[in-house]
Amino acid sequence: MRFAFYGRVSTADFQERDSSRRWQRDVADDLVDGHGRIVAEFFDADRSRRLPWRDRPQAALLLAAIADPDRGFDAVVVGEYERAFYGDQVLSLLPFLQHHGVQLWLPEAYGPVDPAEPAHRALLMLLGAQSKREVLRARSRALAVSTPGEN
Image (cartoon, rainbow, N blue to C red; front, side):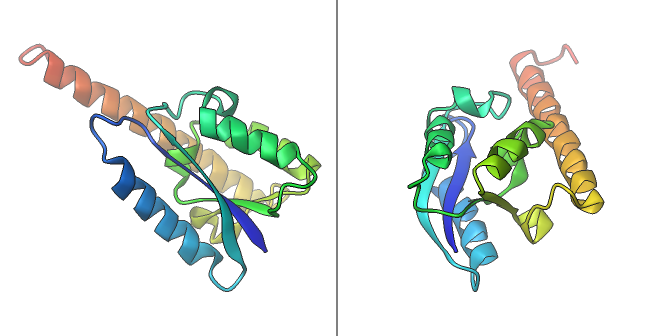
């Protein structure tokens, strides 16, 4: 199989882009090992996970590539759900992927996501809740640092 990798780093100021991309790519490479190889890469920097994919430059390019019948890949792999998606974003992306015959592979699912599988839908809901909680946690930490003594 041929895979397109998608990754994201939220802020260039507080996260080092290259190391973040590297560990996400390493996880994705490990996941697809023995199943195929990554042939395309899309990586957003300085874009919040809360933004829809169409509003992230590299994710938007990936969406356009998915819609292209000559795309050159069969599946999309991400290195971590929380880097790629916020809340239930993935649930709106899955029909688009299915329509174009592209699989989604997640390390948390140990491979391809099957939206018809109840366990996978439950996993996606759990991962979405974790992603939202992480955003709230990070926002709370940032506010606590910017207003010391007012917690």
